[in-house]
Length: 249
Length: 359
Picture: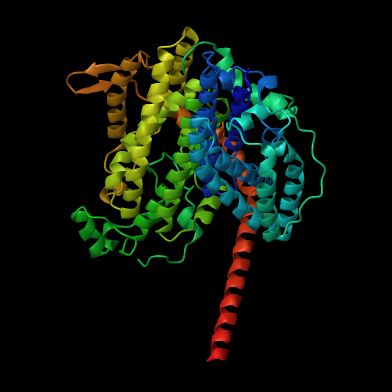
């Protein structure tokens, strides 16, 4: 598989897997407005995933469409960061993770709007607008939960402690072919660290939360080495499509 | 009556005569809520006579208000409980296109719940109290959502049949005498009609797909047909409160009329799908200009209403669980808002003091 396709799949899988976790919250959130908001965010992410998967399929030119790529790849072929695949059934965790992921996506898509891959640039320009809203949503909840009640402060601090170790993979250029950056297709993830971290730190401070002093988690999703949670996520997502291969839905 | 009068528990508690919550329908009203026509304010009667809209500021009989609170609340509850059976397939939707459509649909249902709770609030009740009434079982939701979604085709059957039945019930509500409810229903109906077509399209695709897909579609239709007919409520003879709602312009057509309209609309659609409906008695009656059908056996509906449906406990546990699990976040949001308001007030006081000092 070409480095270009691999790169696109990484971004697509981040969005797809994040959307899959977000979808769980519809009908389970703290209030009705939040059900609407989380569905909206999940839908935006799914939209990004579909556009990127379709584009990856076109670049690959092996006849695979978005559904072939989403439903008929095995776990080791998924390229998303481990951050997004882990269980997300606590509202504080959901918001802490969204804050990290959306802030990173917002910076990334801002840079990718100038990609020499014209389709990727167009997808990124649209996704940048969407992720600005996601960041704002996560930020507002981080403030409310961090600076709300004593209980919410403790729970949000715990959520931040749980999510922070998984950030490192977002900045890791380890698997990215340098040639993609040189050709202006991809963005060197290392360059995103400073702006993303500055924004995250500002939100934590405003929310009266302390910046976790934690070691990076072992996170190699970009290489297809996922957490154990990933197999279950895919089993659920893919089982129906795989039970009836070759049909139209 | 004066709006935003003191709200008593009796306003939202109505299990005494509860016979079956159908969303967009109300065929029960507690005796206590009845108001003799003689008690109706002349201004209210005048609005009804002119087929106008009663607005929150207008005088209205207490029984009218209570009936509307109950019906709108039950409708809202049905929308949010209805998120569960379809939400059950969001994680497993068989294509990304279907997943996106389904997420948007379930999101629409949350939105419908929001409009409807807002419409109920114009009658002087709070959403929080209505939710408490749902969670404690004092108010109900449509029994149709106490059935499980066993296969992907159920998502199609719910869209086609359940949303189809809801539309037949709800389109006349766009002309309901209470303005805020009528206006909410205009938007709800547009979205429901979209959902119904999506459901039809899911079933059409399955019915024209593999043998297994076709069986899946037929099985879902077989399971959802009779419960969908029950959504219109008991026969008119057995629905004594309909007359009052019709006199008030809340209800425009009887349960049996609406059921017949739904059947007449749905039979040709089933033929277009190439699927059968599980009733040997279905036949066009030239003389009546309607389809004949086997009378609905309401024994099951009443059992489900009594709490003995396949998913009653599960649906309530899910809803109550989400509400309780989210309490800490709602409390945090309220505390944060209060802190912000205090800070704002302090800032303003400081600025005012500075201005006065400068002067």
